[in-house]
Image (cartoon, rainbow, N blue to C red):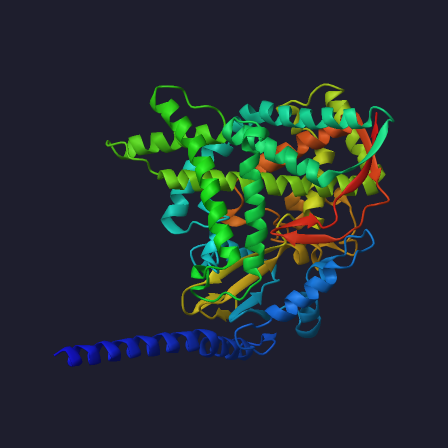
Length: 518
């Protein structure tokens, strides 16, 4: 009996191993080759699939070579940032695919197809390539289906204009600290060279700490620093072959990602738990993002469940707060950095923007309602986001069979990729001056500039458009307005133009300008 049982166990183990080997072989070879055949039959072009690595090795090699170079300060940097994709487009045209390991990534350049992908969120979903990367961007960004609907509904009130107006003093306090610091730096000589990038990273981290949690940057700086490190590790993971089960390996990167997540979790739990207990003790909800989220969640749970169970779990709230930190800090800091760099280069637009700010506010602190009257500054910010979109590429994945997109049938497990950078720079949509800094193109608004087409999506588009876009734009307007009131600025000779991506579009070697006190 014992030998018989042992024989059965051996056969079961062998059977499981064979099943696993077959699934792995199917995933790493048969499935990609079927997808490649299907795409070729539909008229698309791309490289033949290479076992396991696809195009990753060549993509990484060309990108590393490009990062060693700097450019003249022009806005023509797509080939510098994505050299492999530029070569691919030159060879195969825009309607082509690349390989992210064994996953085909289909480039979508037609505005109507881009609009369709953004609109059909239940068919074109967020890619789930590495669960460890999901630790960095949890919450609303990665949620799908009913969970996304519930979270969006509960978070929406925190980003209504009325709530953002109540956060204006928090933004004002953060920007005031920055410009006061700059005034001290330049007070001795009247001018000084500074690197904008670390200053704006600190500013936006401070602002999100105050606006989201009512705490200062000093109290929230540990969360900010940990999130930044986690972001750098996530980028490293995204550039590696997405092998199933790889996250369980005890690699240095995997261990550090989990350690960082645990530390961030503890810090956020302490902040949220304290606020939750205050509300349970009868204190009114504060007018920051966390207070609004907790209040919205509590009211929803009270209406829907007499037992007063939270509609969002405590962990859900922790995840959303972590997302506040990453999205709220990162998108605004890059927008501010590229805005001041471009205004340093284009002094005429800097002068026009300053004249508008002084005509609206004088030397007084900009008020919330007055920010909406800054037409020229709004045009400038839109043009900056066109030329330097915070997120250069947006991807979606297909999980169902026979998913149609225009005339294409997208194979299951494939990704579609929409390049904001490529589309925003395309002369077909923006004219012969597409690579020139010309805010005048937005003088009659975004809809007129784009002719109603989906060719401008710095915050995404459709139902999943970034919920915090007004938050970012108001903060950016206030910061630029207050800087223009006190300083003029020009490019420093030390500035080296080399845009790079670390999830968002950043200046690889810093953003050096010379400040002059007015």
